[in-house]
Figure 1 (cartoon, helix red, strand yellow):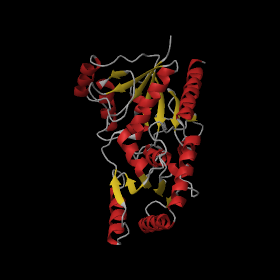
Figure 2 (cartoon, one colour; figure 1 turned 180 degrees about the vertical axis):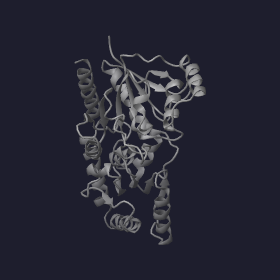
Figure 3 (tube, rainbow, N blue to C red; figure 1 turned 30 degrees about the horizontal axis):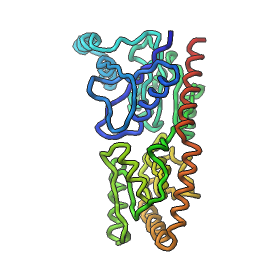
Figure 4 (cartoon, helix red, strand yellow; figure 1 turned 90 degrees about the vertical axis):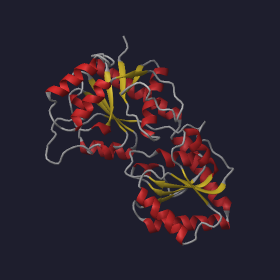
Length: 349
């Protein structure tokens, strides 16, 4: 009998690369002989800003546990009654199954369904300690708990971070894939600069307004990407010559990589995780928080484009090739299968 794998997945009001990767991992596993489910809080909450085909189960019981444990307090009698009521309305978790949790649910993940084995899918290592208290030791935590089979990470930076924080931990690294069918290279570029304003909004506001005050954008259009479907995001990137990266402490940082796949020349922050793909040969990495350098490099790139457009366009093409060679869907699929084969083998031994 196959081991059932349940991926706990939050529901966001905005497009999220982390959520998309959870959906895609479930889809990949089911296509390759595993029995995986997306576990959501309640019906009607499936994301619709990208296309996917996954099997969905619902467990308000588990999500309520996570909420209670978030507060770091013991569950009281009234809360126990609420949990008892919700358990009857929720998917019954196979005791021989595996629960997969994102890192965002904090230091008490191991207390949820304590007898069920777990895997941590840590897509942003910089959120790992976000809900840990300064005043507790956490000698036992979700990462070193005996029921945790492995921690999956998505970048070299995250692998180093988790390995250093939790020595002797079983860490499995996967390469994230950019879907080239959607984020495909386009040479049909306009004098357009796109960016995502949701993260680091203060930095975004400073950079954009300094450019406007200096009258540096003559003939160039600024296009914020927000509340768009995956296909709409890709269409904007395909037309953009430049993309501004406001990565902020990212485990990987998908948007700049997706922009590069579309042939954009990327300027901006690596967010640490992006160091492995924002290379100076075909992009301009900026030190995090250095607003003036950020603006200066945009101005220099615009001037370089005005003098010789093909130079910048060629670098966009090189960037696209780099992404397709190193971060393909095929790589992600192979890594996902290999990782879960490894977990399954160790689980049964």
